[in-house]
Image (cartoon, rainbow, N blue to C red):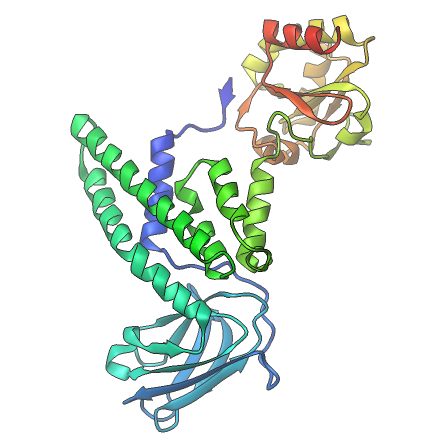
Length: 379
């Protein structure tokens, strides 16, 4: 198989975890509505020692230009108001002061009080979501610090038994984080903070079934939040292409530039074959694919070739040279082929066998395995 890239699972997990641990609070830029006086959130603040006319604003973390609301202080007091469609993290900032305060903002009225010398220790009242978020921080901060220290040490340690042992310890602590996520979500299934926590910790787990179980533990009100919807999409996307799932439709042009939809083959057994003219292993596999086509083309079976080519002429030349007489499509976008990306194809040759109902019943069938699968399905 010709691989697009290679990274060990451990390396991928470590990279994801470093991002998670060093930047545990982030938000996805949502479309914000310009604040109005009829806004659905209101923050009244009282900060001791805050100079008059200090600009106070709420913005997405890492996106200071995406400002949700602004105000100016007077005698240590300020008010912020506007609209938020979903609960999310915003940073409360004060011009002239480096410290910021994270607020899990929902449509509500809340008060913030504190001292300008301790802006990271402000006290927020009136928001259940903020209380839940602060509880999350209290529970996860110690675990985060332990994992950060482990990651820093592992990254400085050479390959060998010592490093392997440390990675095992790291994996155990990572599991503790996921256990805390499950406990938090089960104890607060209706909180908008629960889907947020499940989402931001999802990169450290490769178990989509466990992620789905955490999601399913949530109440409908939490599933309907921004992060709840993002989780649902993540879970649905992760299942695309799995055996036993319905194939997701796509459309690409054939060699005559006519659009061809995968769904147009419904009612037949169809092998979707990902290949390319420049892929040596694919060309070596093509005789077996041709043999399978010739053996079963009259038994409600066909093939849809999807090429990861860039050069149209070379693509068509390879089709003729290898006697690929079935429908061939390509968007000529190389590894960015939209169908390949949809089905998470990272190496070719690759294929999937779909039954007449549109269900995927086999993946990456080659040579004798392809012949056996077709014989079983088309007996």
